[in-house]
Amino acid sequence: MSQFSEFNAENKLRIPLSSFAAQTIENDCFSFAIKKTTLINAIILYSYKTAACSISLRIKEYRNELAEYSTAFDSKENSKFINRLIKGKAEILKEQYAKRFPSDVNWQITLNKEVKDLLTINSYSEEEKYYGQKPGHYVRALMEEYSQQPYYKREEIVFKPIFDIVNSAIEKHYILRFRNSNGKFFAIKPHSIQTDPLSMYHYLVGINLDSSYTSSMDMDNTLPDIISLRISRLSLPKDPILDYGQLSKKESLRISKELEQKGVQFLTSGQSVIQVRLSDDGIKKYETQAHLRPRLLKKDEEDDHLYYFDCTDTQILFYFWRFGKDARIISPSGLAEQFRKMYKDAYDAYK
Image (cartoon, rainbow, N blue to C red; front, side, top):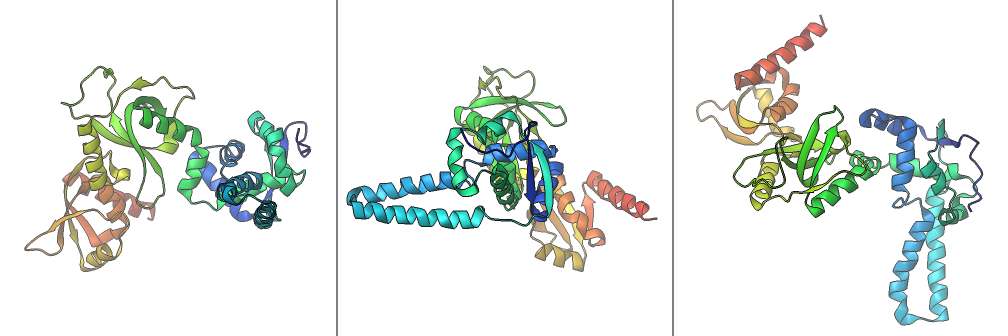
């Protein structure tokens, strides 16, 4: 049994953090709609196996890697050399992770049973070589490492159980049935998990089946909805009931084509030809601002300020709202009205 003895009777653990790590975790609590204690328990439980600061696990991997290369040169001298390499590697990792980070914030966190067991079982006790009998030091290293990851990597850690279920369903061609964070029910034949072009968020992409769907239906002659849903907005049961429902080649090709044309973040929206008139400054903005820029269909032959885009209304809204007076939506009329109302409401707010 591990000799870690830093827990009190209520399984509370005090964790000092840098202001950067604390701010990142608090922001993620808001973004993921998760309480701080729940989030920290999830980070510990779902990141420790792959975290660089899990020094004993990384040394074990390094030892196994060296063993693959050393079998042909097995000797006492070779063993000594390998042990020196391992010791050097351990010292580097210890210096990098088992150190004193800035202590700007102190949090007291209640650990759930699964995390408490993780920090006290025999298989974990090897970590004490590097962090001593202070589990808070190791947990702190996990938090600091987590905070340095890009957003989409942090999303992978926190929602690992959902990623595992979705990836298994994709691999085994199962239909997923679940609700989103708003309680809406979905039944989806999953195609893939995709990130947006800037690798910000993860989306589940697939065919959205209506409530009358049965696994025996022939979907090849229908045009079911293609859908993309943020992974962090899904609510999947731990043991979902999974029915077989493999995507047809036609469905897979159609999804791939729409992903290429629309982008995963705009996949669910309908696509149409949209006319936009740009001022001289609007043209400069369009030519220099590449993020979320919609696909240009053509420019008007007679009016070089009139642009035609083949994309979704949502993408036009996301991209051109910041142009203000330098971009005017000509058609469709409904989208033009949406922009007019949006700008009017903003103007009224400043009266």
